[in-house]
Amino acid sequence: MSLGPLLILIILIAVVSLVTPAFLKPVNLGNILAQTAVIAVVAMGQQLVILTRGIDLSVGSNLALATVIGGLVYQQVDSSFLVIAAMLLAGAAVGAVNGFVFVYGRLPHPFIITLATLSICRGLALELAPGHTTIRGMPDAVTAIGGATTLGVPNSFFVVAMFAVLFLILTKSMVCGRWIYAVGGSPSAARSMGIPVMGVLLSTYIVSGFCAGVGAVLLAGRTGAASPIYGNLLELDTIAAVIIGGASFLGGRGHLGHALIGAVLIGVIRNALNLLGVDVFFQMIAIGLVIVVAVEADVLRNHLEARARAIQSAAVQ
Image 1 (cartoon, rainbow, N blue to C red):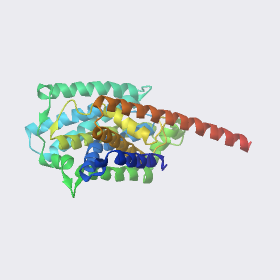
Image 2 (image 1 turned 180 degrees about the vertical axis):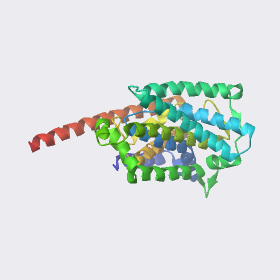
Image 3 (image 1 turned 90 degrees about the vertical axis):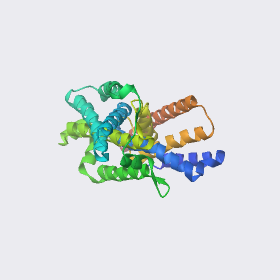
């Protein structure tokens, strides 16, 4: 794994801690972990999609719809298991729709269907929510997972750590994980090798949707509520986390750790700007500029690598 993103994070933390001494206080660090957890877990799903040269624009609206469905279930039955299951299944179902339409509908790019479900899910969330507004209340287990702490560490951090281990095993130790990289590197070559390309693509969107459902559990637990306006611009945060972390839009390259580091980078930037009293609108501008710089860095990196390969090829000849 490239140490570039990690070094940037370390430098950023050092600079921010010098400018704002309150940054390193345990309470503030706990807030960063809690606020970053949703972005981190959803970014892991987004990473798999981007590894296959795709994108999932629906994750924010998917999360909002999942929280609303969970809130509606809670109004009918006080069962933590059913509420959590409803949110996870809702997220995975939207991911399955994205993957199925993209793969079997033979769309030229997943941007089309995920943009459509972005709008559809947000509309459904607003329509299903009573009064088109927030649904108060969540089961104790949900609030414990998303809002409580253990030994001063947010429980949501442990959820992210658990999923990080699972995704690391998937991408590094399992055949299906290597298939994802192969499909992203060259779909035609992967197909000629006998890899079930369509199945791999479908599975990545289901996993991305499931991660949005996990994010819904964490956010609903932290706020003790469900809302149709949750997850606004979450798709941009997760894409930014993956790209800032060093993954490539061209697919086939990227490390899970990079996505997590990118998520923490976004959390640190937002927290630092809050501590400095920077207006929320300027915070949006700052994150947008970071995305532009990250994408340009990806383009430059691909250009330099192409030139290096050309030079090596010429030297061999």
